[in-house]
Amino acid sequence: MRRARREAEVAEVIVDRVACTAHGVCAVMSDGAVELDEFGYPIQSRLTLPPEEARVLVEACPARALLFRRPT
Amino acid sequence: MTFLWYVSRATGVISIVLMTTVMVLGMFLSGARRSVGSRTTIVQSVHRSLALGMLVFLVLHIATAIIDTYVHINVVAAVLPFASSYRRFAVGLGALGADIVAAVVVTSLLRRRISERVWRLVHRSSFVMWPLTLWHGISMSTGNEPLLRFTTIGCGVIGTAAVLWRLAGTHHDSARRREVLRQEWT
Amino acid sequence: MSLTDLLDEAGLTGRGGAMFPTSVKLRAAFDNRAELIVNACDGEVGTHKDALVVAEHLRELEHGAGLVARKVHWAAHRGSDTEDRLLEAGLRVLSVPARYVASEESALVSLLHGGLARPVMRHEPIARGGRDSQGHRLRPTLVLNAETVWRISQIAQYGPGRFRGFGTPDEPGPRLVTIGGSVERPGVYDTAAGVPMRELLTAAGAFEVGAVGIGGLSGGWLSAGDAWSVAWSNAALAPHGLRTGTGAIHVLERSACPLQYVTRLARFAAGESAGQCGPCMFGVPAVATQVAQLADGALAYDEFALLQQRLRLLPGRGACRYPDGIAGFISSALRTFRADVEAHLAGACVAMKERAGAAR
Image (cartoon, rainbow over all chains, first blue to last red; front, side):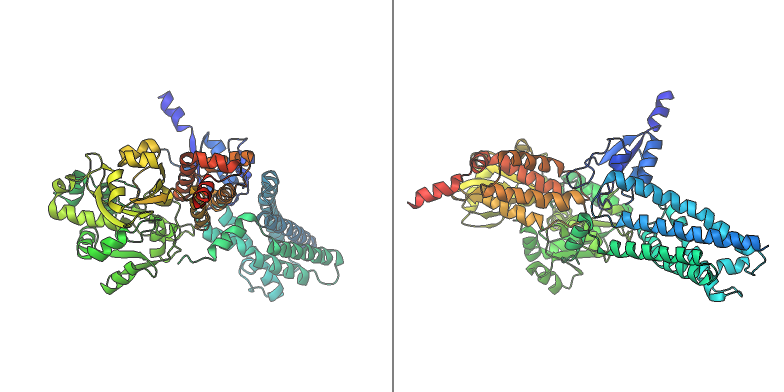
């Protein structure tokens, strides 16, 4: 029971590559969890984060290029 | 109750100053030449919170204009453009501007639930809202109050400079996208 | 027995390169009443099999397509003979700009719905429908390669048993390959997985084999030695990091500098990015520029490390698999032609020297 709850306490965030326009906000807001390549685009394609951090990160993206991915 | 009329004029000019600041910051975000994540993060958070902060003054401006009895502007005239019996056109410009502000704020709060295309379209209507509001401000703050008028005109000058800066800008991402889009894709 | 069960039993996989089980795609399509796009673009570099299927087996193709969907669209490159043939047959043709990524599955679906022929960021299979980057709705659409549709017709007609009589148990069924480059008889050949590469090369009259490209721009390279000894199947090619893909086979002659050839394709690739995803629209041109410098003997050792770093960062970071394919293709070339790479980094071209020596 406890374990099941803990599993629900992570959220997965994915990058919409077409929407991403290299503002670089995710790298600043994620405390280094997102790194940028030489052109300014995130290297990671998905992140697993506590839901609250994930929500803040998703809302911070100026291009709306970060999306929640429902756990499968 | 002429006191409320003065409060209305003061909050009106504060709204214009804040709105111009929000606009300038927004153009700085969308027109940045280079990606500097830390700067963008700060500018964006100020852009977003200041926009909500402006709402307080705008609501106060409209509410006091309605409640005060010095001039007659009713609720309908404050919401429906060009429905005011008092200075139909100048008040109407303000009402129209306020309606667009409401649309921009609502779509931004609902951004994750609506399509990006709709959000962008509504957000871009700010470029119409802003001059309308300035026009409203300049024509309302008639002659007797140079401070209000020159503040508004100053906002116009700064905002226009920002628009020109925004239009002249190129960012490597948008430049490359445009370049490839010119090729045959249909 | 239903069509999907038949295809399951036959073990048919997509002949457009992805080799995904056709029955699985078909079930999703039936569930969503998807329309069908028959992809006869031959979009992969060095592949001409779809053109042959349309030219010689159009009746069977139409039969196969009719089994899959009520509404069928026929995708072909604009200005190609295949497009003319489909138009002459009175079919509903989707005229596709003749570019590499335009015939990718989701790009075709986008084009069909009035959008641009550019890949779409998908969060679920396109057979269930979706939205393009502008937010326009895309109806559920199934995209099948022309050869795949032809095979469906054959399986429905002659049964899965006969189909399984070709190939290996894991990779059953007849296959079409396109052989080109340094061969006397370039063209499309009937074969099946498991055939020795030697047989294919001999049949096409390969000469002066320096190396063999497998699977076009989304594939990679075999050294001449490997090419003569390996079998043509996914299982046998896997240790070399390769797949049969669309069945393209390109023989590179021994006297040619392989890096010059790779540069030509890398430059082409740089111009084919759809300009939608940052890592691709900047990464692919950056890589191509460095490959060209390498071929010119103008790439320093430390810059070579940057090239490899850029190649590592291409895969998995796009709406489609285009950057993955390019990175695989160039990485494979750098591995297979290691001796040439070393020589070029030292500022010399082995092939050029040999050619100059032979000329004297």
